[in-house]
Length: 209
Image 1 (cartoon, helix red, strand yellow):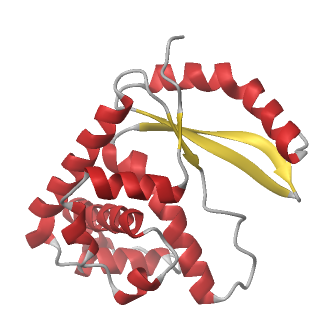
Image 2 (cartoon, one colour):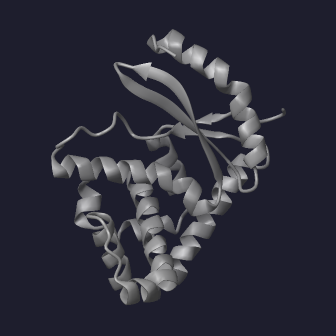
Image 3 (tube, one colour):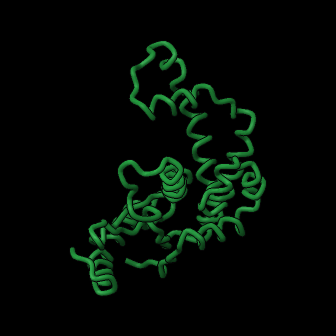
């Protein structure tokens, strides 16, 4: 397998790259809510996460609003509120701008990765939230997690998560991303790297397989 040296990026590094290479994200960042702006998320990644959520709501409303309003399904807590929020959303006027941001972001990352590049990022921002965690802290964790989880889905890129073992009783993993249509290439690279990554993690952190 021939592939470029992987880009290993932290959330901060990725956020800096987005800010530098996706100029139109700046205007969208100014529209973040006070809660989003005051969170510990990287601002550019918060904007990408918000963009993904708005586009999801719009697509859900377009495809399922009639069914939800007709059938009135009995949805569980959390899901019910998000569905209602999507049905009630009025984001359509901003769709053109949002699609422009997505297109610019996709082009920038495609230029970086080309056909044989791999981007390595954290799968999640940290240890999983604890039961009965403070609501504000839980929301902050979710926001940071979604800012990482949104990238591949928003751009139509492919992503795999490689489990590396456990540390202090918590599972540790890393995610690899490749460009649109690079699924077979990405899986092949992940298979080739799997043993080496686990060995390096075990040596560096004392992880158990």
